[in-house]
Length: 249
Ligand SMILES: O=C[C@H](O)COP(=O)(O)O
Image (cartoon, rainbow, N blue to C red; front, side):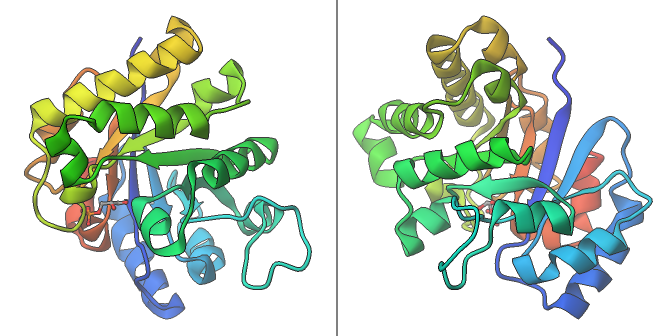
C-alpha cells in the first residue's frame, strides 16, 4: 500500500505568539507540496494565531500535548474540545520530553489516545528507546510495550488513521541521527507489532514517522525507506530548512 507521507514540525517550547505568526508566514510558501501532509505542531498559546496564518494552504495545525478529561478543575491543562475549536487536527502524545520531565506514563498516553480519537484529532504517538536500552538489546521490547499499552482499546479503524513517531531518545536534539538502517529496522518492528495486535490491513495503513535530528541532508534517504512514512522534526522545523525537508525528493 502506498501510504501518504506525513511530515510534522514539533516547535516544542519555542516562539512567542508574534514570533510564531512570523515563522508560519515564512514557512507557508516553502512547505508547499501536494504529495505530503504537512503539520505544524506548535505551543498551545500559538495555536489560534498559527491556524489563522496558514489559512488558504493545506498546512494543518497540531498541538504538542492534550489532557484526557473533557473539562473541569485541572488547572493549566488543555482539553480536546478546546483544541478542536482552535483548529487543531493532530496532537503529539507521549513525546519523550513529556515522559521524562512531566512523568507521563504509557497509561496516561493511552487515555489521551482514546480521547483524541473521540474528538477526531489524529494522534501522533511517540515512542523510542534510551541509549542504555539500545545497548542492552531491549529496544524492541521497550517500544512494543509503549505501543501495545498506548493502543489499548483503540479500534482497528481508529488505529488505521493514527500516526506513530519513532524517536530514539539518544537522537533527539543531539545531532546524532539514527542510521537509516536502524530507523527502518525499528519502524518495521513497530509495524509488525501493530500487525500482531490488529491485522495486516491495519499495519499497512498506519503511518510511522522517524524523528531525531532529521535535517535536509538526512531526510531523503530516511523517507525513502519502506516503513518510514515521514518525519517528526524538532530543531529543523523552526527554520527555512523545513521547506527542504518537506520537499525532500
Ligand atoms: O519531536 C521531535 C523530536 O523530538 C526531534 O527533535 P530534533 O529534530 O530537534 O532532534
